Image (cartoon, rainbow, N blue to C red; front, side, top):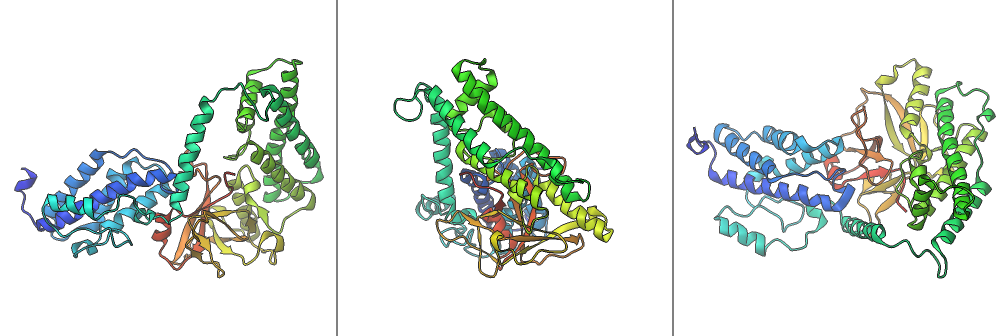
Length: 465
């Protein structure tokens, strides 16, 4: 039997309203992609077919159900039709928050608002030409980020993304004939860069000697420290050796291997060489900033190795911060004879910085060095809106306190994801999370958690500069 022949339970007005809401939702999720990772962790390729099947299901449910099944419709749209393409669980959380903004009982009223802005609403039910007139005459040609659920700083993020992609394209096609300062050849630039990094690294850090700690099996954090030291030593050795080999290869003393040639090219465009990257931690920093950051990481590891347990740990310093979390849980689990699989972390924002740590917890650890994107913390350590033109906010010391999984978080606490880099996307790991994802941190807020989900609010271990 044709759909049109079915008994119509609800009038045509509600179908038109919900169809407009569905079309608006379709446009929003597509346009959010232009904002980069604060829009979606992964830019999904949704298609018109997703909209068409959702429209068909909407008509069927309205024709057959005595009450509008908003939960079922939201599930079909956000989890099945559009959500079937979503592979990141944080993106799945976002698409569910977006559809519930449009598919809810309030849509049955007049002039239902589609965003906090007064401009965007479902027009009075009329002819198709009247709807087109509303779209052409009422809706602005330049959309405010608020309509997508983002704050005003999202425009700056989008513009930076466009500029970065433009310059990456320019770098990929520029000739390699010229180098740095006027009169320098590419070979001279490469040698000068290598010498500068060589001097900086050798003057600041040296090979980490695990013999400084008599027993790396004494506790879980020391085991983790030993594993991190092994990773840093491998990276340190390849950096020192390759810097020396590159200088010798440019002089003709050794053969210019493929790795050294790629390293030479990377130095020309100020990028981290691939032979370093494949043994390194995740980072989006340019070459000079990356070397400076590497030195700082090595200095922190040296301090922990020589001075023992820290009052607060610089979480971004680690190759594998997830391992640090596991080690901290193991410390508590062994102390209290609790199964580690039953533990989660409760986050408390401390009112002090890493340079003035006033409290060292008996259970759990203090961490520092994080950045907040899409929000800020007020004096009461509550999550609030970002000030204009402030894309990132430094986060004070956080206390990660182990709790049993039955611990109930507040309804106004936002489960804020922590990522290693601003790209947020990564490879899907066996845990079901991206390899870029570290953990969720519960941050108190006056606003509903869905507000911050749509804002794309997250914490980062490092910035890109």
